[in-house]
Image 1 (cartoon, rainbow, N blue to C red):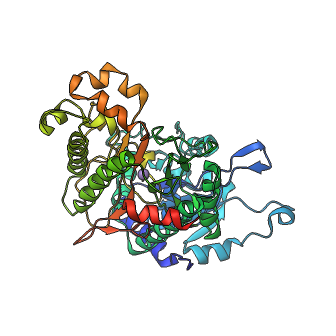
Image 2 (spheres, rainbow, N blue to C red):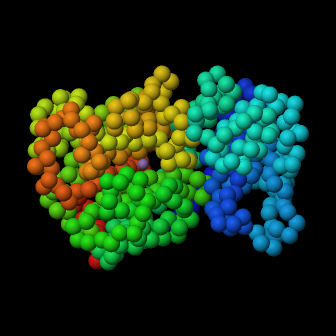
Length: 467
Ligand SMILES: [Mn+2]
């Protein structure tokens, strides 16, 4: 498969766009290597997404300094003897050229180089303690690993965060090319997972087939892969169950390009190659909600309204199966949707699988909008009016979560209009979710992940073809 590389001119253009909007100097850390079981055996390095967006290279411990329209990269110098283990590193001069920087300097010079501006520098925290310590020392204030909680309106850090969000919300051409590539490789992984199923005796064999496709394309995974027959455990990252005919497999897996851009697809398929009638009935309800929601991904549409559309289609469909009784409007008002669909319809997608979630809800929620307090809706990660070139996921689901079904807090308002006798017939449906990656365009939504089919017949045919 073809590989895609973003030209250095794009990174220069992104930095220039940021220079043009920020009024204070900015310091952005790539993040540091983290030890696994002893210092010399580290976790694979994944640089901060803000750094990757602006620099395009994963350089452990590097720091990008933006001031007076100039971009300077501070990096760790080569340790004597490191060539033996790690091979030679590029020189400062060659890095300056390949990354289009104004300067590349030794990290040990950072503190003195920025000292005069120390009190006016904005930053965004990374996720590791060592980098936050470095930033704290350089800036003379406490920087803690990021969750967005520390961003206060009006402060320089919040202004920098808003400037990054303004850039990263609408993807440039190179970013869209990366997202299409991530989506395509991710789609191939799902097809491989489906084809591996008939001969697989456990979840881990399907997981391995999917990871093989990602790794062969040079991609990492963009989040902890979910490949499970227990699809009702939403972020279940174990893959050690044996599989049997009658089970459904839920795979929520995404690739990440070498530059860091994410794919994110969920599909559900039957281990036997054929959905049972009850599985098929629920599958078609989720699919109807997903297709209807994708159709609404258009400029100016409020993402929360797409969430509401999906809830309505789900409740209508579940009611038509006899699991709910009563009018759809009344059921929705009483919180019926969250009993089986207790999460949001999706999220922003970009360099992070939940793009810019390190900034809290600042990226996902438009100014003046806040999370709902209602169960289910409180997990909606995005509430903006859609703009061209935004990438979002659309991923409704149906789950039978015992803790939800047993809790009056979630079910009392619906009461006997939840027909538990009818629901009992659907015991072979634990969790079904269908997820695609979608870009907002001037016209019809661009479904990046359409290479992997999703009608029940198509999915069955692919699983059966793997026998
Ligand atoms: Mn997702």
